[in-house]
Length: 207
Image 1 (cartoon, one colour):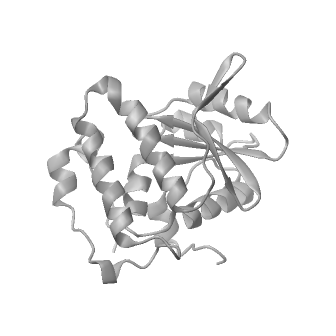
Image 2: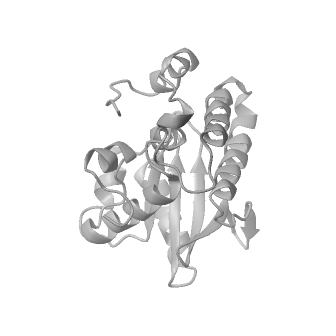
């Protein structure tokens, strides 16, 4: 069962703390999609924890590679980072007939409102059916979350490092989490809801 983690970044990402978390047996993992094995998720979870041990200048690129592996695992046809005139896109993937542009931030500071606004404008400047997924290791500032929940339409959803840990622990599949986050955004106008709250609230794909 999920337990609310009361630690703040960087304590949440301390390798000793992460290694101490209970790991589920293969027969206990329920929230994975067909074709995705607990062993594959566990491998990526260990890689995610191991990013903290890399030199700082290597962590961001390693994080992007890990996300590409995760998207490939779920058959989301990921595309690696690419550059357009005047802007950089960290990647993209396909899910439920939607193209999602990806922004990935591996930093100790929470992602501020300004970064969310820039990414939202990037996505909005593309086709009308484009969506965005902003993945931030340390989550998002309260001001950033409020900016996307007070009368502003949103075309992006957020995912935190804690969300990734729960996904790789098998609490909810990646595809279920994306669909539930997108549905929650459509229903509430909010940019971000945690995987913890989705699972606690009983939200699963199709529910």
